[in-house]
Figure 1: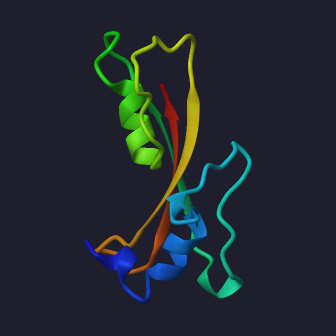
Figure 2: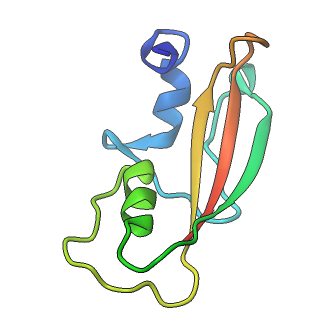
Length: 104
């Protein structure tokens, strides 16, 4: 659970942070890692649907490390956010970079 804060996980965490906040990536971007730390990327597309005002946009903002909108306003259409999440699954023991495409 604390792998990202360990000395082994810190380079992966640093690759997704900018000024101690999670960096926003575009659709074709990914974190730059040194060749020795290159890991496979696993891509998931998550579609969030639900009633208006339940917190879908706030959840995406929280996961992305950005502040949630202070006032409620309805999201028109679909807002896509790309988020990278490094992890080290217990079964494999090798780090993986999860690329999450969140559709709100």
